[in-house]
Every structure is written in C-alpha cells, then in structure tokens.
Length: 110
Length: 112
Image (cartoon, rainbow over all chains, first blue to last red; front, side):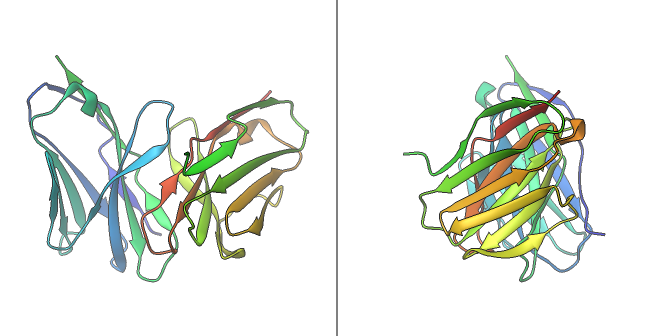
C-alpha cells in the first residue's frame, strides 16, 4: 500500500525562525514529489516540485533522499504569512495519481 | 481569470438527494481530477480523466459518477447522498497526468 507520512504538528515557531518538515514515502517506485501549501478553508497551492538534486526558491528549500525515502522542506526566516498546512505528495513512475500526506500545520507567531 | 473553477462553492442538501458539482479549467490542460478532503483534512484522489477518458477510478461508491464532456470540463454527479459524503471536493488539472496539479477553490458539501 502506498503511503505518505507527515508529522501533523502543529509546529509553532517565532518569526524569523528556520523550520524543517520531513515527509516519508513507502513507494520505492515514486518518481515525482511536490510540496503544496493549504491555507484554512482554501485549496492546496503548489509550493514547489522536488528534484533529485534539491531545489531552492527564495526562503524555501526542498530536498529528496531516495535512499531513506523521504523529502524535506526547509523554510528560512519564517514570516507570519507562512502559517498554513504543508502537504507533501508523491507520484509513481508513469502514474497519474498523486498520493498526499495528511499535512503538517505551521503557525508562525510574532 | 480563474484557472480552475468549481460551482457551487457551497452545497447543503438532505440525505437521499442527487446533486452535481461542476469544474472547468482554462489552462488548456489534458488531465483533470476529483479529490475529496474529509473532516480530518486528508486529501484523497477519487477520479482522473485524461482527454475525456477515465484513467483513475479509486475505490469510490458507484453513487459517484464523473462525466467529462470535453477536456476543459469535469463534472461529478452524486446519487442518494449520505451523511458521510460531507466533505470538501476539489477539482484539479494538470498539463498531462505526470505534471504539477493545480486545484480549484473547492466545493464544501454538507449533507444533513
């Protein structure tokens, strides 16, 4: 059974802090990985795709560790506006299906 | 312009009724999806259509019937609604089945 596991949190961090989330996946054939952000009562929005070599977008860094089957999201210099639930998702090779984790809730406090 | 839109945004109905939710995307994508997000916020795929052809049909009661009249539209019809159907239903689309998915604003269904 394909599963994606995330620590549900909540993670309560002060503004300016660095916070990291991990997400483990059980499907060794997983090909593509993504981080989504979901605000309360809104739709999930794509934050970033996760590439094998790791990738960075401003304060956000995503990494993939295939050997240990996890992906990570690092947020530097947290802002109040980063408060949201962060969902990781994996997609098997040739599969149209995204499997989501249950999300990690982040609250950035002043 | 909204890329992926859904109607209605809210739907309150009684058990046993039949209802439909509509989704449209103006991104020119080939693949569209329906997801269900329950009260515990778990987001789960229900159906996927690629070029109007059903690709994914997860274990969903056959009271749920998707229909794709064309590449830009994917509707969801639900018969004999039950209390457990209460959830937020999200439509999504992607360029092809292997690319990033973009979500609509969701339809919050409440069955009383």
